[in-house]
Length: 32
Image (cartoon, rainbow, N blue to C red; front, top):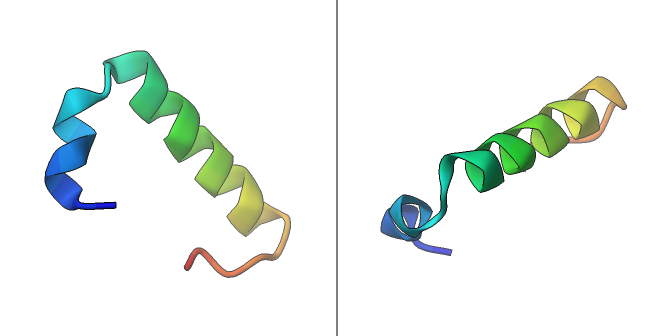
């Protein structure tokens, strides 16, 4: 996924992805 693809997503989608990533880190997974 290219960085500029993020601009095509709406704010709500970006927020959902970020929240999910944070949850994964809090669960002890690697952010990568």
